Structure formats: structure tokens, C-alpha cells
Length: 541
Image (cartoon, rainbow, N blue to C red):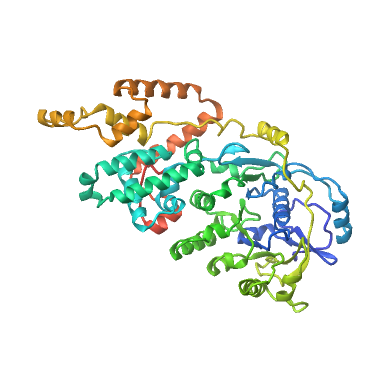
């Protein structure tokens, strides 16, 4: 078989049949599900039709039973959850392509939002993010990154969980105050570096980090769901606000990609992927990335194929993606580029040279002549080889093009199978609470301290962490604080039920496993880049 279809209108549930994407003269070019995990690239200038192409591809994959994850950076992909509607413009396009109107249909959709306003809250823990990705998120230099790694290691050795930003802030204070005693075992700790990390952490909180970090953490199985009709669920992340913090946005998606790589088993070649991951505004991933990080991103992209995950980068310019990564992307959709500057002209040449030549036309010239909704396409054939580039029009999606109304969004969230699972944040005992208890309890009963040591400790001035914890507790006594904490914990435990309780229980089991392990590799990127970094109760899989 080939990936050119003679009938563009017939819907199919055959996982090996091509999914029609582009109309070329009297036939269509389709994406083969069996090779959808060989990754891809969608490029083109602003306003050339990338978003509609993204919607069409996601819609066809969903209909074939493949779950999809995509970031909605402009806020207009949520309409996929509603059937499309006929309009004069829509009818005119179908007539131009020589096809009848499609059967309008909605896609099963799950809405996500880091801020918890436009979708289900999406969270990770500080521990799972790891020191290297966290350092990139906060823009730390090499020295500051080393101090952050040290803080994670101290937390690991002390059995202190790092779940949210207040845990990390408490650990920074703890390490700074005990720098002298920690020096022989862990190395020097610069107060200037600790201060810089604290300032970066404050900035991260202002960008939404205080809402993103915490529990219940995302269960990746919730991204791999199908509905009762066998259609893949399209997971849409509201990224319009998140994109205002581009480093947070890019590092979060990179973390999610590395989590998929780490957690999913090897599956080899499947009839269709387990998940297709669209990385919109992909240039943000590589902006400012070190050569070592780019190399490891390339490794993840290359190896995650065997986990059944396809990764598609969406960006304006092919030059936004490093050549080492570009070479891993087998399925290409190239919209128009404008060659107004020398860099633009180079981008056009690069885009044309990375497509398999077609003697019927010059791809370099065609790229600058493409209209809105028109594209050059080269997908992998049944042998896994790039097909000669074709010029055609992206087929219109059968779901709505445009955003949901607020009423429609509320209805979808209320009817979601995930409703109530992530909405209520849970703050269980972690590094902040443990260090607070230590600060309030004074010398521990397990240590046989001398009377002189006790006397010295009783006359020492109030520490930095003591003052922090006192302010956080409104100046109450240590005994009252412990009682209040216990009461609050009991109240939270009593209120958590159903799916939320299950999510927390699973997180607790993972944490127990990491506490037993102690020697912890933190994520695939952290493990490759930094070796056995340890830190803060990273769960072990």
C-alpha cells in the first residue's frame, strides 16, 4: 500500500490505514499510524495555517484511537470538543478542494491548566522535576545549579520530601544555616548562591510555580485514555497564560516528555502510537539550551519512539530546531515562509533541503509561494522512507475551529471522567513541616546531649528558620504550632476521599519506595546529565 488515498471522505478505524491530512490534486497524502511515532515537524510563518494542520492531525489520530497531548498557546484548540458547523467560507474551501462537506463530529477532550482555571490542575513535585530541570526553569548558572544539587542531596540523606516551593525554600534556609557542618560531607555552600536561588524561586512563584508544584501529582495514565467508542482522548493544556513564562512552559513540557520516557515500558513497533505529543512553540525549548542539554533532548527524542510515543515539534522556522534533533523528524508539514532577510532565505533553503526532492517542482521556490492553508508535505511510507515532497491543501477538520465559550468549558469539565481527582490540592508532611518541627522541638530525645550543650542551645539567638516558621505561624509557640499542624493534617485527611484519595495514596507509595532506595536517579535528563543526583524523595519506578 502507499500513503496516497483515492477516497478522501471515507472514515476508517483501521490502524494501518493512512490518516488523510492534505489534498493533492485528485488524491490525498495521509499519515500512517504505524509510523506516527517516528516524530515530525510542522513549520510555517504566523498566519499560514499551522494551527488548523495541528487540529486536523490530532483529530485524525484521535479517531484512529491514539491519545494526543497538545498545548493550546492561542486558546483556540478547545473547539475540538465540539462538532464543526457549515459556513460560507467552509463550504467554499470544500468546493475548492473538490470534496463534499465532512461529517461534523467532536473529539473526546480533556482540558488541563497549570493554574487550575481553564482545566483540571496539572501538578508536579519539586522532587520529580529534579535539580537540573529546576535550575533551567529558574535560569541558574553552573555554580548555583551545583548548590541546588547539594540541597537536594541533603534532603535525600535527611529523608525530607521536596513537594512544593515552600519545601525547597525551607531546605535552602536549612542548608545556609548549617553550611559549616555540611561542608566536610557535601562541599562549600555560598551564601550568595543560596540568595540567588531564593530570588529565582520567588520569581518562579510569581510566574505560577507555587500552583504548579505540589500534589496530587499528574498520573501519566490519565494522558493515555480512550473513550467508550475507542477514540483517543485529546489532552489540551491551556498555555496562553503559561506562555507568558516561556522558560516555565518549555521546561514543564520537557519534564513531561522525560517522565513519559522514564515511566512507559519498551513496546517496540506498534500498529499505532500509545501517545502523540505536540510541542508547540518548540523554539522555546532550545533557546539558551546548552550543547549538552540539546544532545540529551536528541537522545530522548530518538529513544522515546520505542516507548510508543511520537513527538511533533511546531514552530515558525526550521532553524529553531537544532540539526541533531531535526534529523530525527520523519514526518514533515511545511507551510509558507517569507524570505525577507538573509536568515529567512537560509531558513527557506534549509526547509527545502530537508525534504525529499520532487522533480515536478522546486521546493525552495514553492515554500515562498504557498498560500494560507497550503503546505508542502512529506510523510513516511510503508517502508519507513520519506515520500517525495508534495504540494497541496490541508483538509478541513470536522470539529469546530475556534475556542469554547465559558459555559461550554464548564460543562465539559463537570462531565469529565477526571472531575474531582486533581482539583483539591493536598499538603502532606514534607520538608517544610519536618524542619519546622525540628526548629520548635529543640534538642531531640534520641541524642544524648550533655547539659552544657543543652545550655548553649537554650541561649543561642533565634535562627533564620525559627523566625521564618514563627512568621508563617503568626508568632504562635512551638507547641501550639505542632498541635495546629496535627489538627490541620487530620482535617485534610478526613476531607480527602474518592479519586483524590487514590491519587494521594499512589503518590505516598511512590515516595515510600524512594525513601527506601535513597540512591535515586532523578528523571531521564537528570540521570543522563548529572548522574546519580539523588534528592528530596524522588520516587523510584
